[in-house]
Image (tube, rainbow, N blue to C red; front, side, top):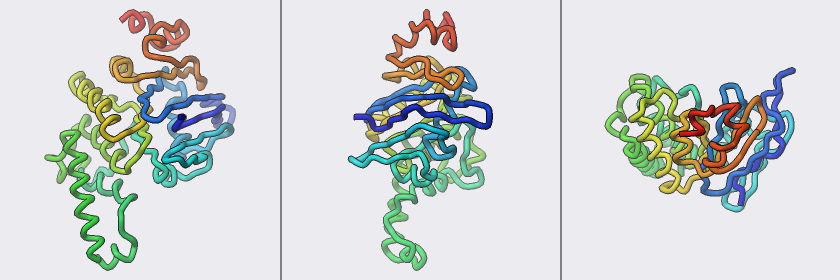
Length: 261
């Protein structure tokens, strides 16, 4: 069953066609890669999926817990509520808040108390806030960030900021996680650790994962299927070995060195 379905998706900005007639399907529980050269339209697809842009044409549907939702005209907060979370190519943390507060804010969209309980600080509010703090710290611990919970987000090293952004996305309780270049700016050791963590997260949190990434060692190691874009269009789809051997993909993006690796 397809959890995410994109059919003939198009986005134009004036005379520029950023995404052209793109279709893809992701089944529940899959870990799928979306690759291609810079400017191929990958992040634009993510922006269309999360309500930042509205499609010029085409259909985006998301199915979760037996309920199918058309995403085309939904606001980002509604899409998040439906069960889709993302990270960004350029880190967008709340830099002047603590590490813990970055996660707590994300978790509040599913808080189990109403406005009145929060305003009057009723017992339900105190119990839920305690639970949110505990669950936030548990998430931070998975990414080895719990000891930094009281640090300001802006003071974290770049690689830790990247990990914090993933934690914040997970805190919304998604079923579909979109990762936009999660390894960007990381060294080899950090990338290797992140690769293992992403694979484990899929199983631990029962997630479906779609990731954009230029680090082919990460993509080829953990992705079960890969879609390839070039100049706004989808040019290939298949298993990692098929993608590595695809002449069109080699010419447009991978190059002979990667294909022969």
